[in-house]
Image (cartoon, rainbow, N blue to C red; front, side):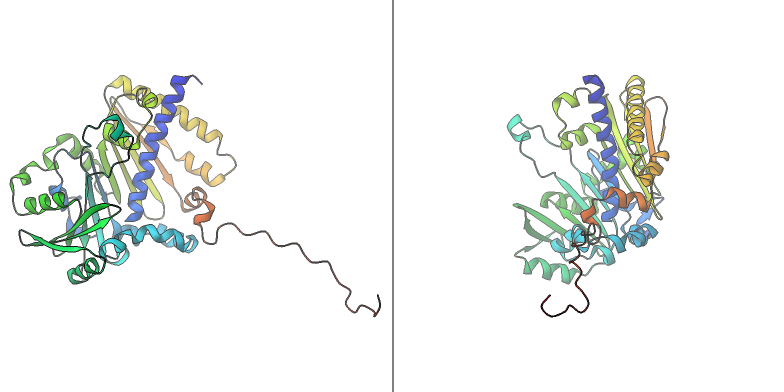
Length: 354
């Protein structure tokens, strides 16, 4: 394998990882009343220049056959990730949240020294569900947070990992979590401020991908340059990646996961190049999956398609395949411990003196 081909394969792996990230977003996380024409209402609060927009139907995931089939085998210790929202704002994800919409702002230009230090992304998470404002306020106060007010809306601010993060009560069934200025801007937009006319619905490219993903349990749409920057791809690899402008991931979850990754390349040549790389990667992976039949079955579901500048990669993951992918330590009890060696057999009634 030449160096250039190896770079392309690594870039393809990166695209696949974006798909897996979409699956993780879905697992964090259905109130059709908050979804109009398949598009969540909260999309109107996302700015036009957002680098990444994501949606997860939490209620749909919690009620899915997949979750019911996996829960008995999940180690209780590995469920801590789903408690992050509860730990921060006193909100129970499993019982109070219907769906979430999140976005990440474009990253600012940074010096090489700043690029070497991981930065906290400027992001906002909008959570739609059934909340108890008094419980949220009490939780924040108990954890040394402060209570503020902005244009008639309560905002709770709490330090988290060295950063101040705010929780704003936007509507009776909607809260927002992120940097305080982003929460302020959302409140402005919800009250018809000037930014309300500059939301992502005016971004034709992004909205085309959002509409393509409607009806999915979870989806994410973003600019590839921003995603690759946050993945911190080595410069040697980044320079060899075919020009990709936009990437979207959608996943439908019930008895298993059916996912599709869509990439919009810079031109037809770049799209053909990306398809060639993915074909090689898929063939190589299929050759190496013989030891696990459940993974082999998953790889058989992979379909590569698309035309002109669009590349699509779809696949299905069964519960058995998910269990095979998960590290042994994440399954309940982990691998079975080897049995201790048996003690030497003793005579039933040993004679005295022998």
